[in-house]
Length: 447
Ligand code: LLP
Image 1 (spheres, helix red, strand yellow):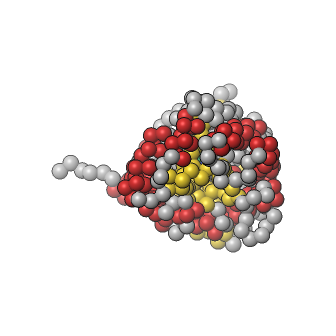
Image 2 (cartoon, helix red, strand yellow):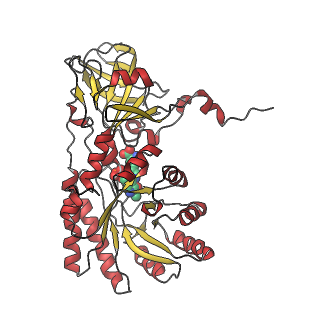
Image 3 (cartoon, helix red, strand yellow):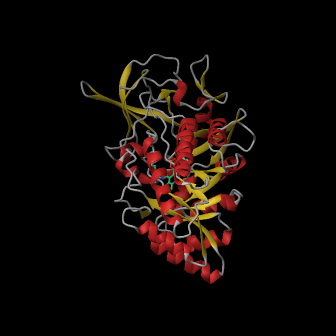
């Protein structure tokens, strides 16, 4: 059973004020809930910046990559974890690149003025128009996922008479020991060119022989919310083996990315791996692996999403109906749920919560926090011990920054929630709450 969480799961500026209210960056979240309504997603800029800088920094901070990797390195933020114009601008200002997986993400990145040379395009089924957009806007790297895509991209490049810098995404057949739906590096996966079947090696040769493609590097992403270091290191080894073998066919590994995937704790009992520990392990694996194979060190590119943005976000909900079933369970419903956070329903993801207006009170009852959507599976937290919850209380769920709003839906014609960014003691809206007009916009009435 989860106890009310220590603030360590919350953004680093979180504090409990003397009136028992949760504050983020000096702002009372109860005031934020009143001003902007709930459900509300609050992002703490200081936490985002600190987590970017833990990976890398352009400002001379001692960060993990510059301490542990003795060759050029970069970090691209995986936009799919959460993207809006303001966050893209913040990420750009921290000196990171951006990994996008669709024309839509690329469009928002461009709206933000994100330097396109620092954008990488991923995806297992990129459309011709997405690849063309990437070429026309000067996206830095296209990460090719299949032999079919390789041929298609070469054709698109030929019609424009340009040479495109690419990576190949390799499927190394490595188990990331995470939820099945988040494993992406097994042989049985829709992603990437399998090593085991020889497809990856054949794609390297095909890329090398194309006059319109420059094969700059190799990439693998084995999954997400990974809480062990060993699968990352095995991935490095597998890809360096391929690089060594392909060296005999004229391939040089200039750039290398073992993807993203570092997990974060969601509840107190979860193990956590510090960003620095992860970066050190991966860096050492690359350095050691290259040394033993006689390969020069490639530019190392990490692609974190969740570990940058997840712990920076807090979801605020207003408590509504209580339903007590003696001897069975007490359900406390809030004004959001699976439409803004489908993770519990999709992956059985666990969360904890704090009553933001009673953060100094002792937990006295174990309840289930239910959403308001028409599914019995719409339970945000199955068991959490909290102070007595009454209608109007504000519930704060930490580690809500990644893959909540990014995967939110309009189920039951819900309005997708607003998001605010707090910085220097001020809260600014970065995503508007949807309205009935937004919902109506796509409808066409029969005349
Ligand atoms: N690179 C690639 C190619 C990816 O596909 C992903 C995530 C990342 C990097 C970033 O992974 P991260 O550092 O955020 O773990 N909806 C799931 C997670 C899906 C991850 C998709 N790909 C969840 O809510 O747990």
